[in-house]
Image 1 (cartoon, one colour):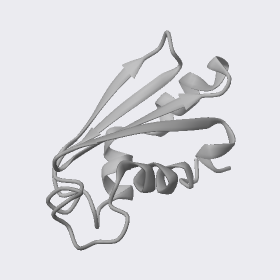
Image 2 (tube, helix red, strand yellow):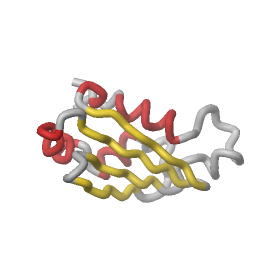
Image 3 (tube, helix red, strand yellow):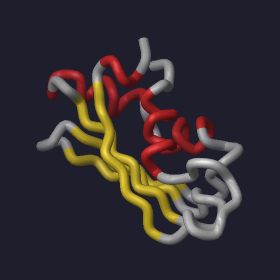
Image 4 (tube, one colour):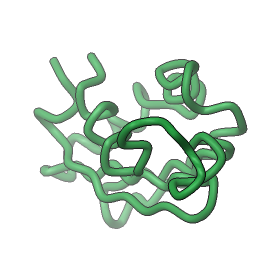
Length: 99
């Protein structure tokens, strides 16, 4: 099963930091997502892109997790030569994670 089957995402970028939220479509899936999608798993998933820490914040009332990924945008969206290093591209990749 792909993560996108039970959740969607919102994102933000600031400097070299990407902020990706995962929001369960059905709040009953929140605990499953929380158990499987850990900060370590996200860090490993983006091992070639995210060079800094990944911190997970839990928002159980919203059925959401928020991942703040440091040193994740190749120096910053306006500085990198990489194609599509915005958070939206990273969140689309994260939604493709097998869970």
